[in-house]
Image 1 (cartoon, rainbow, N blue to C red):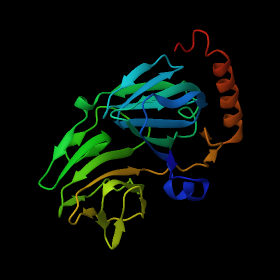
Image 2: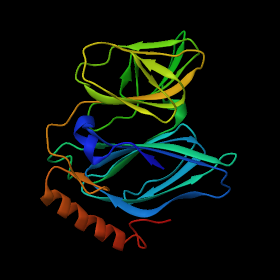
Image 3: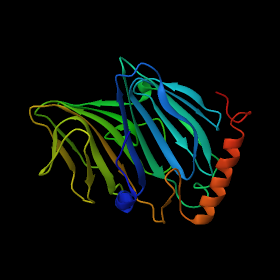
Image 4: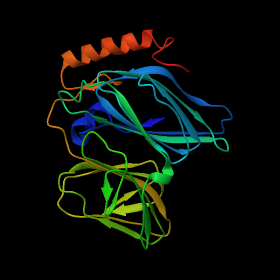
Length: 263
């Protein structure tokens, strides 16, 4: 697991509080994390190689195939377990978290949403194919909604190709993450497993390739005008909410062997 968002760049990437790339090769058995808790965040899980089995205290039990998407809105606390089954010896997935707006949404009851890959729109253009995971790209809109304004795109660009887009002017925070190939954004070149943080700009986003094609993720969001206090597993706007949610997570963990969660 490689993490890319830390306390020192949290303010710059607000509302995003986590971007993790899990990539394990040469494995034959399932791998993952046992039951643990979160609060105050919305988590987007996206397996790209292998299957991901998810169980949570909202009552959601789902096995995600490659390319499916699941959103877990943790609110005042949720407990979950995720395990990946490899495909051809490899298991790979991406995790994106946003903070939740202070107030009712931050401390609401937890919930889960799921959509299979066949229901996520693809926009095919001359040089690129764009899969709309969350938000909108051109005339395509994801069927699954996030709690705050976010655009999350999975983009494939052909060799010597280009990708060009003018996003919503409110989506001023975000990043590009390169999974494979090589791309140029302005005068900057990105290599695999590198994140490029985007600066607020009124200019369109223009991404180019050279002799190699590329697969990358573009993530944009509207910053939240609130403090972001992080414990690592949870993010809240104040310490009181953090304490209340931690107490709720402890209660859920204590009941995971009972009716709240069934393996």
